[in-house]
Image (cartoon, rainbow, N blue to C red; front, side, top):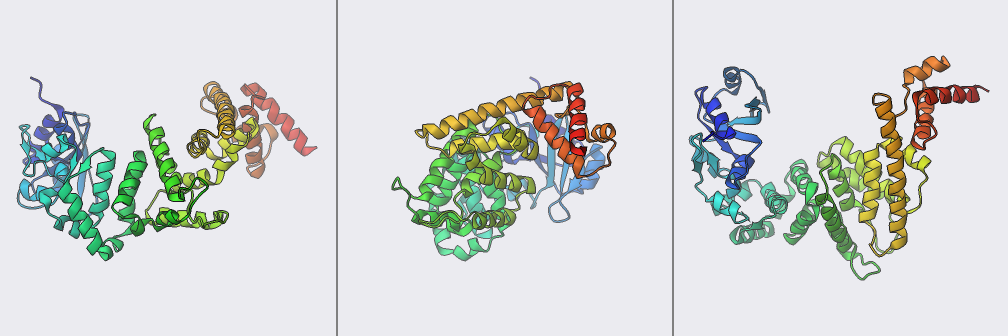
Length: 432
């Protein structure tokens, strides 16, 4: 029988004179009879730079404290780090949950001292060795536990749940003092594809006051239906989660979920939403969570723009928005408005459907331009505009390109020849 690729990768590493084990997500995949496509590997103590030389490739990153070797072996992405402790068993004992506290040897057998395979197959998240000190040493493991349960659709083992609840009750300062950036890392992972389940668990374990007290405050604000704004947030997060699971992942899915999480930020009972204050709250949280600038900007755009799509937008308006923010962001903003609208609000749903249709027409024309003009959605470049009109770089060129793009988006221009003719006429009009 042909040796599995991941075992051949271990053989290749061990041929350099070190012992190697597959750990983490890859070991969990194998326990589920899923072939892993990338590997986390720990090796016996060695110089990772020397190991890279021995393997003939690879880059060591992470600094002196937590270095790791990133390499491709047999067309498989591999991250290699040195074992902590004197044995693989010591290494596994330091890992947070049983699903992560197992390893695979190069002969294919498991090192599984804490019955991780049993828990994986039974859908359980369980603290390694039922040792609550692992959580006391690193309180971020509380939210990490909930994130795993949400994204893996697993239950939390009863003893782990009990121990963690007691820990949260008696150690609030330990949790509050955890770095916001580390909170953010787990929160963002939890929000990517399963925002409802993740936030539900965080609320169930009473963690929201520690990292998102603004959301906790929404429980005090009632709305017309008799529910609270917090209930509304949870309802919309459920819709968002269902929406995200119904299609392929997109680059900006994180921004989509975060926008829904924050779209009532700073709300006060019986008062209009202070959008400036709301924006400050959102920016503060996203910055403390070390959210990328692109994601933060997309969140901001969605929150500022989504209400505008409850009125009919012309193709010209939509083309301008696409040129300013990108097709994906505009499309996502309309989807956000749909997720935030009651299904029985037929007027809004009809307007959103009409805007979605108009956007698809604009997108079709831009795609056609890209096909005809080697990826240029305006048919001509800035350099060509300057040559045609004999002008220098400046705001005028940007204005012409923007108006030209709108003309393409609404179908006035459908070829490079027409684009050049439009530029000549536009330039003559401006100079008249």
